[in-house]
Amino acid sequence: MKHIKSHFEIHTRFRNGIFLLSIILLITILGYYFYPEPELTESSFVELTEFQNQIDSLKQIAKNNEKKYKVSTFNPNFISDHKGYVLGLSAKELDRLHKYREKGKWINSVADFKKVTQVSDSLLIIISPLFRFPEWIKNNNTSKSYSKKKYPIKSHAEKKDLNTVTSEELQKDAKIPDFIAERIIRYKSKIGGFVSDIQLKDISGLYDHKRKMILSLYTVKTPRTIKKMNINTISVKELMDVPYFDFETALDIKDFIKSNGNISDFNELKKIEGFSLEKIDRIKLYLTLN
Image 1 (cartoon, rainbow, N blue to C red):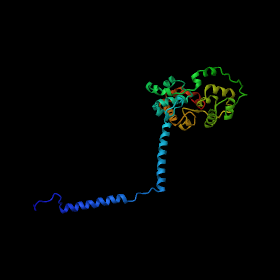
Image 2: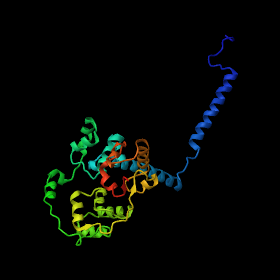
Image 3: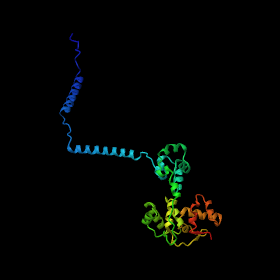
Image 4: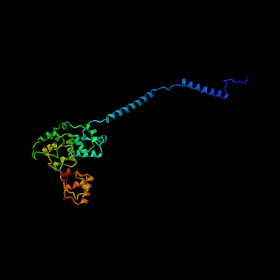
């Protein structure tokens, strides 16, 4: 019986390990109960408040952006490059629209938009419900009233000088909207003064009936002095002085003359790619053929 060991007898190494583990557990428990909890100071509350304000600010920005990019109805005559990109229009389709509008023409229906831009039917179905046209277009009565419009009949002597007219006079006498009147004055200054009444056609957004109203009251009495130059011998720099030519167009004209010989008719310019004869009557005010 003396040689029988108790089941509860533990080797010395195990007793030391258990004792060490007990000490570690005791220290951990005492530390948990007696270690002081961190106190929230006033500065901590300020930092938390600032952090919450930043979060709220970011949420508000996101909410505003949702409203900003919300699709709403619009007039298809005034589609910017960004708006066109958002709608899914290609660069060529936008260019067709902008060139059409530069001629002073307007989109008055979905069919007009389709014809001018050549947009696909699938895209047109999506964006056309967003089109918003003025009420006078919907009622289709404006063209009739314009055709019956009577203008004052004045002699050349009775008319005022178009080159000295002010924006205020145009608004008062011809009932021109302020932004169109300002556009006329700016363009007159840009080209150094009108050479002929026909140059009113260059004003973007000026309807024919309003142009006729202006010309019933005003005319160019003191035209800008122009020394016409021969288009066949003029330099690129001199061509750029003509209001209707930019640098690229001037180069194209000179290259065309170099390749094909002298121009004998202004209509030959239509052979130049991208050249429009729409303003040929105004171009003739500045250039000759010999």
